[in-house]
Image (spheres, helix red, strand yellow):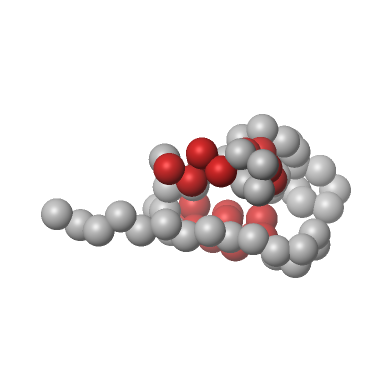
Length: 66
């Protein structure tokens, strides 16, 4: 049985996190996203891949148990 692999992509605004997530997604890595800024815009024409609960990890860490 294969091991569970988790890849957490984090960074400052405009640092390439969405691009990194898009590359992981294109390579077949399942990505967890949803909650905010998913629609494309001028600054990110392919859309954002952000997961809202991750922004609250200090307050509500239960999403890490998934």
